[in-house]
Length: 205
Figure 1 (cartoon, one colour):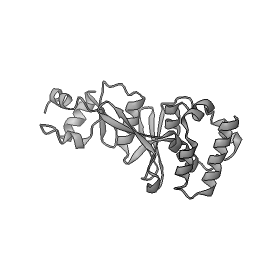
Figure 2 (spheres, one colour):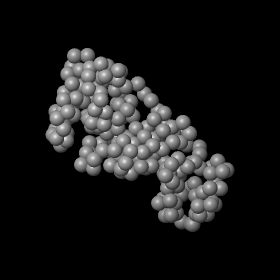
Figure 3 (cartoon, rainbow, N blue to C red):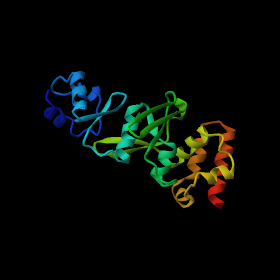
Figure 4 (cartoon, rainbow, N blue to C red):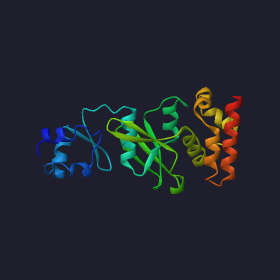
């Protein structure tokens, strides 16, 4: 298969791997992919995930790549905070949680970072329709729980102040009743205390 046909058949895919490539009308050998990388036609991101070289990797595209690079996973922690406007935007580290081991992948100056959660906590994310795919992003409530679950050392008002949270936006988007329901699934008294501290902080900051 030549590159023109390859590009036409994968035109609607924001990223592709051997899974998609093997479904094409003609055979594409790995050495051909390496050749197209050298010519600058395609880019290998990580873990056998490719994009076309001329695509603009904006925030949602990076989120989708993060979902694909390490599965199962969903966007959470600082990247979800930035997406919802809880903290200033940052695009150089894409943070996710996964039921797999903690890992990190690098592509140019972008870092895809994954923190481990237990499989029973793999819930509380939205499926965002983007182009012809979906992107998994933590709900505002779950992003906050994930963060304080994985960072137990953040347990004082001073620590929370250092996060530079946008209190107004947090109060608009976070449903504390939902937070309470989710916390009931954790059976973690210390996490519940930290989340109560966050709730009080948003009420009085």
